[in-house]
Image (cartoon, rainbow, N blue to C red; front, side, top):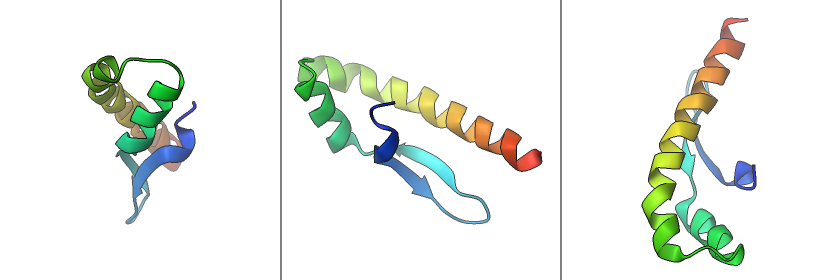
Amino acid sequence: MRLGGQMRVASGMAARVIGWDMTAALNLGEAMGMDRLVIAEFLPDLEQVMVSEMNKRASQTDES
């Protein structure tokens, strides 16, 4: 939720989330006291799940 405003979005026929601003994500993690190495290790996997779920939810909304 803290990175909600830091999403990269592609527009076209329908806007789709393509990822997070990684610089902002790394800075946020450091500000929260997390080790930069740990952030770099886990953030790409978390981003992949977030993108998939956000786009799945958007598709369900588009179909309604």
